Length: 123
Image (cartoon, rainbow, N blue to C red; front, side, top):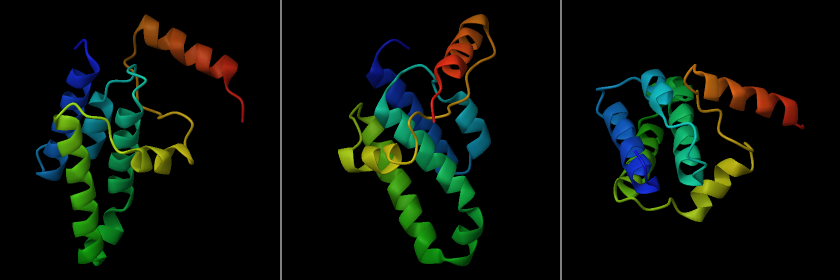
């Protein structure tokens, strides 16, 4: 993949597969591109992680489940078109997370990036 639109389309497919039960959230999260620096992809990652974290609530509250499904559907449909997510969605996650903790592959380049983040991390 070379362009941001291709990354967004790829992420949209991951989210769609989670929603239809073809892929677990954990597997989808490990397949997210980790080096795009795209705020839309980072927000989509956080939305997907929250989707899994709310599993118990989703089982108890049908309306919440439907809202969350609709929210993820909006995200995947927007990314599927190669578009950026609306600013309010991105800002919603940015106020809690400086960067998305998207898992990186275990290769030399990724290890250098991890080490650099470790050296420059400030709370």
